[in-house]
Length: 180
Image 1 (tube, one colour):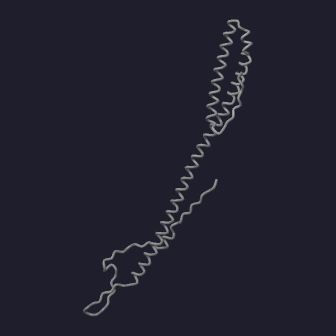
Image 2: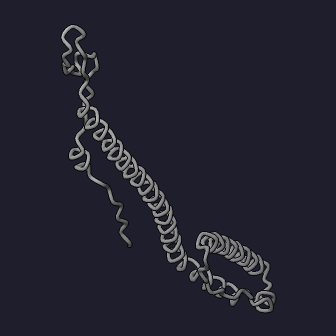
Image 3: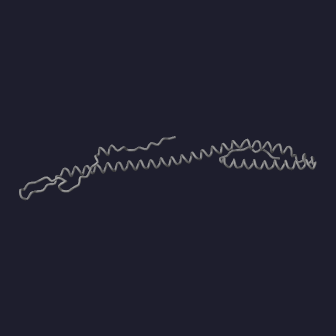
């Protein structure tokens, strides 16, 4: 005699759904087989076999089981759908965490480069002050005079300097991670 098994949705709703679908198919096959036997016994007039094998009760139990299993099918399917949504959410969350980590790395690299640029600018400005403080001179051998000579006269190209104030206005980036 067929007994109705309670459907327990475990940690794998997909496996539960497949198992439930298989159980429904098996139950339908058993019902068809019993109905066929019942019809054959009725045709041959073996009503005693029908009663001795308890076919009507077995059919009733199988039909009740089938009704129960079919009623559970949408519930299990809903759990499968929910489980798939959670899997997608978890994958998206992992992607987001990876992107946040990469952004944090890039932020750190940007801030390091900014600091290096400010440091280099300070050194360049210091060198520029040192160079502008020492004026190149040429002694005129005829008159013994000293003449200041500009960088242009010496053929030096002017190097455009970035002011320290401009560099300090480059924003420093801070990474703020929101907790959910």
